[in-house]
Length: 323
Image (cartoon, rainbow, N blue to C red):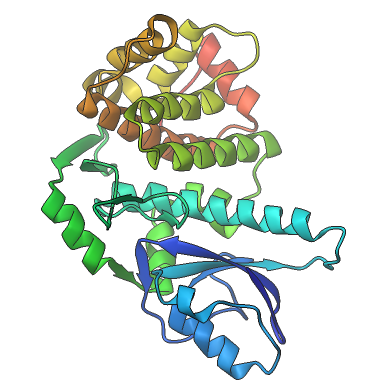
């Protein structure tokens, strides 16, 4: 849906679940992510009450969602380009959804955050997240560690009721720390002067991660996580052994061995080539940790290497230095 807020331009709204925005007022004059922000339903209602123009917004539907991602469009809209612009704004909303998903999942928010069409399914008339585990990665140590926690149904229902209360200032501060600042600058804040091939690879990988982590089928979750990694680390006409070597270099031996990457790759091979279903939930969880860690670390290397081809070449010739 969209609205032409008189002072602030044309905005497209996309319902977002999982984060409850606590700010009392909107920030359309200075959006959190330069052209995009997150609003509460009260913020939206406040905008509409203050604006004299007619809006085609379903007020009842607004009250059923945690928040709204609002994307500004600065292009003149007419009948011939409206669908295209709406799609561009939707893709922008997915970039922000991907960033918040990477962040919130790594922070052990058992309730996954995401655009409303994705992260939840109806089970016995109760919305439940589909991940059965949460995890955190500790980046503070030279040898990163991770922790996995099992979630039971009561935890999930409880978290669904509580939601995650957060202000836009909290989001900005947390995404500006050392762990997330580079991935956030690419997907969110747009403060980094980064080569287009780097930016495109990371955006595509993040959106694929975002779609895959919300998939109700664990087969597709694991396959999607590996596709995410291939977007980052593969180039045309190279073989899978090179991809595996690059992945090992990116994450280091501790993560590579600790997360059973060889078993993850074998599970994918067996699914694709032997039609063997994936049934190991913990292995799927490890694939999600692997992809989460890899996207964040790959974004960090945009500060060292000029292009995606540059980092791939350095890995292949043995000149890659991990940070």
